[in-house]
Amino acid sequence: MTTTTHPAAGSGRTRAAKISVQEVRKTFALRNEEFVALERVSLDIADNEFVTVVGPSGCGKSTLMNILAGLEEPTSGHALVDGAEVSGPGPERGVIFQQYALFPWLTVRKNIEFGLKVAGLGRAERRERAEHFIRLVGLEQFAGALPKMLSGGMKQRCAIARAYAVNPSILLMDEPFGALDALTRVNLQEQLLETWSREKRTVLFITHDVDEAVFLANRVVVMAARPGRVYDVVDVDLPYPRTEEMRLSGEFAALRNRVWHSVYHQSPASERP
Ligand SMILES: Nc1ncnc2c1ncn2[C@@H]1O[C@H](COP(=O)(O)OP(=O)(O)O)[C@@H](O)[C@H]1O
Ligand SMILES: [Mg+2]
Image (cartoon, rainbow, N blue to C red):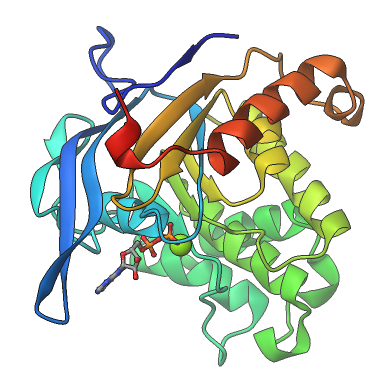
């Protein structure tokens, strides 16, 4: 296990990064004052890497993700994907929000097919791809159902299937399992890792759950608030596939404690070296 505590952790790598966040600052106007949501955030994510981001509420996790999704612009600094500045949403980036963003008037199958239609796939291919991902997330029984007939967990599985189906090389996930019960959550974590190991993807996964952050990641980025910044980066040197046994291991516990400590015992920005 190696760790670093540096505001620009992850930068300075030699390998070309799939995602590169460079000295990003983001401010919002708040009652005529400038509120600093992100300060000097730098982070490189390699192709096919799985990075989780954990940190207290309000530390800028969603702001960082929105910048990478192309929904917000940095006030200064750069957000690059495949070496090019992000200038809006793109089909190579699949975004999954905490709130299942499904079309309520479309069935599960049609929700999943929607993005494929936009991408220009023909009817037969759309159907085939949709069925594949419906099976992957275990929604066969509900393919023809409207979102209102689904539980929260099923809606989120549908949102995940929809994002995967478009085959983006990057998945940006903002607390996707946050509203789910513990068992569904563990199932979806395992499904996500299975898909990730089978089909090449670069994943940035935001969570406030330290266990989840460690279980999934190659690397855990810990953020701190006021101002939002990278506080710590913890490498998770556990092999994949990750198993339930691993979750109970001493090695896992040590990593979790390390991340937990970083999240909950953060020193104020002024105390940083
Ligand atoms: N559009 C906005 N206008 C003003 N303040 C914002 C806006 N978006 C986020 N913020 C503020 O920026 C900070 C970081 O927000 P956010 O990225 O949502 O944090 P997190 O996802 O880590 O909980 C919060 O204090 C939030 O109130
Ligand atoms: Mg958030």
